[in-house]
Image 1 (spheres, rainbow, N blue to C red):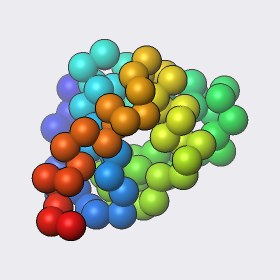
Image 2: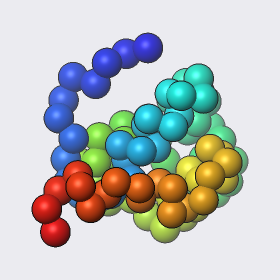
Image 3: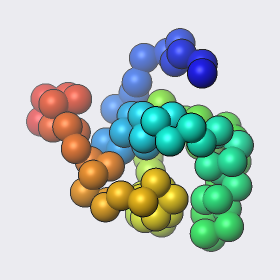
Length: 87
């Protein structure tokens, strides 16, 4: 498993949790992207990497698809978000 080299951005609140949950489940990025695409998300590897890195905004469709793929509630993707950055 690769270790993230860059620091997380602040453009979305869910990227870090999506990455963590995806890795816990042993899902490769390319497979996750494929599943998101099959659920109607127009996303490519670069865009997805930026979503996980929190350096681009996550759409509602992407948050919904990620929660379905990871089999968690959408709320779970936001857990700890308030502590990631002062509000």
